[in-house]
Image (tube, rainbow, N blue to C red; front, side, top):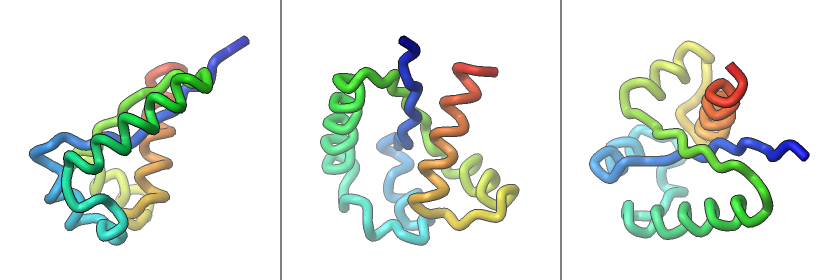
Length: 94
């Protein structure tokens, strides 16, 4: 049985506040990096237990907006999900 590769948007502590302010829906993210990390780790653990191969896809404050612009996407949750999924898939199925 082939396991599903699941990309999850991941942030670096020094980038978190900057990214959050760039996102059109940044208010939906937890106020602090520590709060976000706790939730993200729980999500990763749950997905792993369900049999997914979880690929952390770092959202870079320079590369992600450029990707969104090239795809004519807003800097929002849907774009982050798509970016993480496409990046993870490309890493595992080049």
